[in-house]
Length: 289
Image (cartoon, rainbow, N blue to C red):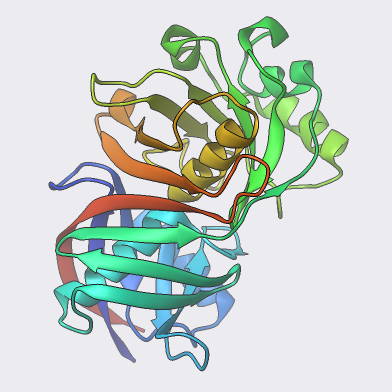
């Protein structure tokens, strides 16, 4: 079988920035093991596989190296950019069927604005347990972390400054007790999403990092799903004054990425989070299976 493939750098307007994703067109019917093997072959964090949908314009499946997940942010931007690159869609509104529900997108040139679903808020794990996962102490965290999802759950954790963010190191030994406390073992809740309320550049308002457990790569350059969850958390907790801000990630990895973020609705009744970013199609080819 032959499948068209595009390798897209998302949340950037140039090659080798942001976060890469390989999009396998019309690959949604592939079995899970093949999809996960393809992700491992690319050494990327996630890849997507598209197909027809009865409820939206197109169906998208999202895979890590270890499992399928319901939604992911930078792969959504990458998928839509790849579809436009091949002339399968044009500018304007578009809908995606995902495991987290229907995701509306708006395409304008190389920019993709996706509206993630209304947030759900979960557990508030112990500060010390969360801090230990990042090799930090509890007093490095300025507000109680909380599991938050706009399609994929993360424990949003706000650190006191950029210097502290730079000190985060993933501690696998501490990850087990953290998961035990949440009652989940690596299938539904992702690693903590670390953020600070200052940008990596003068244009940014937040700066973030996501460090990951094997078999994923050690760090994610830009995490669109977690950015949406973070925005909902910051707005609902009163930690930001404006519902519109610029999020930055990946600068410490040499892969800087940016997203324009807008939380929709009042603090106590958020209806969704719009995350918008650019994308650059880096490579196109054919997958032979």
